[in-house]
Length: 510
Image: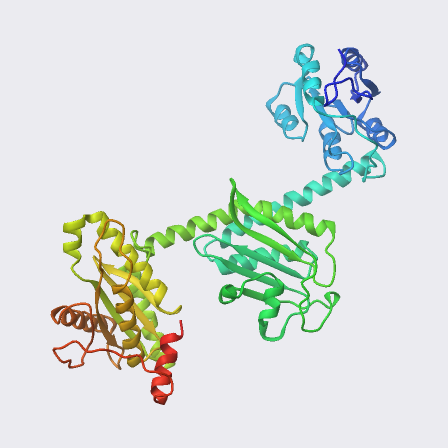
């Protein structure tokens, strides 16, 4: 019976089918079966002849033998799939071989259907009807690959070899997944070898993100100014995480102004999850089709590698953080404190440590349950992270205790910040099914010559105990004699004194 059009009526034109087989008997057998479907059938005795015919005529379906001399059916299929002008032609492979290698090669050649000749009597016609279902006869499309059949095969195979080599090089980047910054540099170094565009940006999400790596070969603002970043679509808040490599190339022009120009974004994904993106910017020039295709190829191959990077980062994060609050755990906080003390002494800057303890926490657990207690700790941790400055460090020290490391700050400013934290935490909204009010007591200590990290923590702890003893919901400073009545820490207004102005800048410098 004749095939139907997509609308269900008889097709205005017959589908054109090219049957390719070097065995006249097999070719005749296939053609006779296909005639029952009222198709316009053309025969070819070799893939070379078939390729010549595709330059002269338009076909909707190719039914080809796999094993043929010179050019095989698999190579023929690859040529059509690699030519944008003919990639939509339906392709069916027939084979008499039953080996696993042949079956694998046939299934992965890009063919729509792979049928054994032993099963052809039962499967050929249903497979053709299924392939043509919903289609309409193709209009004439000019093949983009020209030349002799062997030249066309060579071009496609070279094209696929390039893909395989690029994908192999991307997999080699697995050697750098232990370091996100170096990984970004290596990705863009590879991309720059095959993408002839002036600006490349790698955006990574995941546990260590978001981060941006940039490789610029065109004009770039002096001192990596914001306009250059903004032109490449990088938000201002991410500038501190951006890694930039400027490699001037005269063919992309000179000057100091980045021109956004044409751009294209290729998502890096795996199993439906978006992991980041590879962005290509043309600047004042236009990137070619090969550049865009290479960028897409790299982004596609990066999915599994970037996922490995994220898994390593997640594993590290689990080792460094507290499972309940997501803050640094005690072990990592101790290491960071040692590092910050060394940096403060090296740069001759101030450092203070605050030990914060939730007041009446046992009573909260007893009255509202441990679930409410957990929510209180989560809320306190989130609030501390939100209120401190960007370069300060917040950690869960243990139980209901939190450690805050204030870097590059004097004691006066640290006291003001600690008092603000205490006041804001006391006014934090009630947690679900928890206490109406939450408060913390804070002990504060300051880095001095000769003091160790352990001694600094011990001093903060002693100040915390004193805050508890003197009524809770207050700040006490180590080594400072305090009156028995609570004292009020006032935030000075700018202009009261030069020292007050400096302290206020530390307080507001989040």
